[in-house]
Amino acid sequence: MLIALLLVATLFLAYFNGANDNFKGVATLYGSGTLSYKKAIIIATGATFIGSICAIFLAQGLVKSFSGKGLVPSDIAGSIDFLVAVGFGAGSTVLLATRLGFPISTTHSLVGALVGAGLMAIGLDVNFAQMSSTFVIPLLVSPFIAFALGAVVYWVFTTLRKKFGLSKESCVCIGETRQFKPISALTTSESSALLANYDGEVLNPQITIAQTSECVEMYTDKAWGFNIQTVLDGLHIVSGAAVSFARGLNDTPKIAGLLVAAKSLNIKYGMIAIAVGMAIGGLLNSRRVAETMSLKITKINHGQGFSANLVTSFLVIVASKFGVPVSTTHVSVGSIFGIGMVSKKRDPKVVMSIILSWIITLPTAMLLSALVYYFLV
Image (cartoon, rainbow, N blue to C red; front, side, top):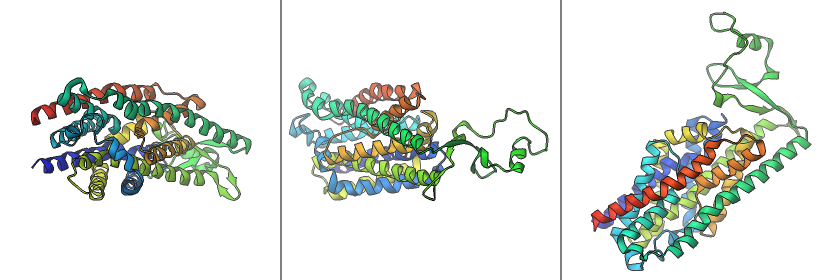
């Protein structure tokens, strides 16, 4: 009975992990107008699923880190009650955030849940030194590394663009089906149409053509016969898929640690089950977090989105390979904020998202997992 409950708790966490996290890798694609929500979530789900399956072979180190062993005595870490409490505590925290449309870190939720259940089980005998070296330091340092790399990568790309004389133009949205077109490329009839409404009445010169999120800049030049904007869009899509792949690679073994610690299921089957749960959660319940990540945190263009995704995917994949627990959410936000420093378009909401994630997620997960453990025992 308890084994079945543990499996339910693990899949519960996997489902809402997918709902809260799957879209983060492609948020810049949706926010910059490169892809529609439907296309973006399909790419995110597919890439995340592939990353989850690859985690079976590439990210074994994270399984051990998130089993609770070393943080609490082995007999407690391997007990079903402890693991069920961690699963439901972390999962409930992510569920609450998802319902509110607030993007948080599942990694932080798991760390908080491990500590909360541990405190309830053995009191202050929890190995806080182990927690600091295994979890706190990597989680604290990774956003700052992402910040620095994001700033450097975007500065390099911006410098190269200016050196090669590649220019950007503002564009407008034309027609019922959204179609971006550079202002310089508008025909005379299209320009006239923008100054008149459907009744033929001339509007004031100050016109709202599209939503703020749809007002983007496009590259109109060509290099070696290729349209720069087309190439950038392709690279942006690939980078978004890479972030989703990295997220699946990084998060799946963390959740699988619950099953492995109890030796209740073969690790391969456990990761496959978690991958399916994450995929379903992403497809069915990502919309609210998608709107927050893509449209509300910060404005970002194609080049900035590509730079942020490049840094995020690189750091998360490397961390997964070496078993270092990092938060995809915080790495992503750190890289975007670094880019904002270079572009001088810093958004205070980005900083607030980092602060709120640290302040709210950990204690909430601690409290919920402690309560679950109390009622189980």
